[in-house]
Length: 155
Image 1 (cartoon, rainbow, N blue to C red):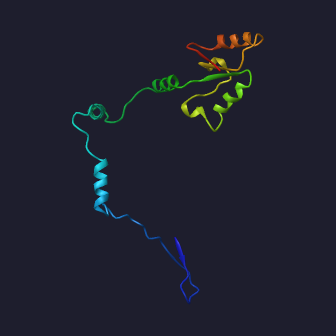
Image 2 (cartoon, helix red, strand yellow):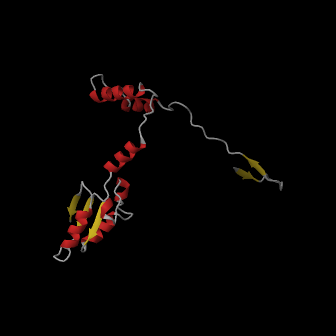
Image 3 (cartoon, rainbow, N blue to C red):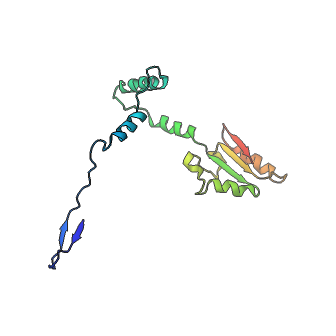
């Protein structure tokens, strides 16, 4: 909102802002030609567009249209299957690099990785550093506590 003080008066006038609506269409014929150059219809023999059209048509003709129904267990299991929950096991200076991947700059959590301190909830063990003779039994114990399927990445 604009506040204006008229000249020669002490009164204040408040006016609503004037909306700036763009002019519909193209102001220049060259803009229209450029738009048409980049927005050509796909060729009839384009396999990608036909496959996507068939999929979209099949989804549209399902009962309920574009709404698919499923149980929440299936959705949660799909989300769990698609994400990795690593157990971090830092042994030496390489642990600093592993900690940096979970920090705000690289943030692997945005890809679905959730670091767990408990091996009972993890499906991936990241071993960062040199495994010494004294640490090998503890590492094996943590590996045995992990549920199947389990993977190990050593750096």
